[in-house]
Length: 138
Image (cartoon, rainbow, N blue to C red; front, side, top):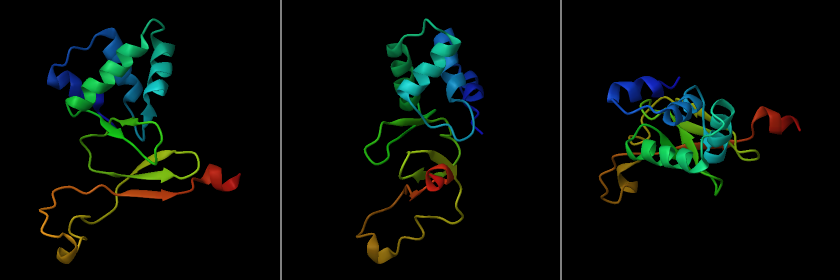
């Protein structure tokens, strides 16, 4: 579960009504909305919120490391509030649904020394792909 609002308060980030609504929309488990989805949900709570405000808030949250920007297969960028919890993503190849997953083991350790080509590896991103139950049944 995301703890985005709590992290922003602890950081002393100024929570205007618009910023708070964006953070509330992003707060939760398995949240991976596009900017347009964030705007639509935010506008349900605060009708006067501007699309530009949502985009600027998302950009600032990415820049300060409080949310992650996730890109998969050329689809629209999505925003993940679980920036502080180590996880990977499971993506439906048909509809684009994204779920957070927590596989066991260290992906960096799984890369054989001979395959590192002298690189000092500090990070690894693994994306699992498949078909979600809804797409599989249709």
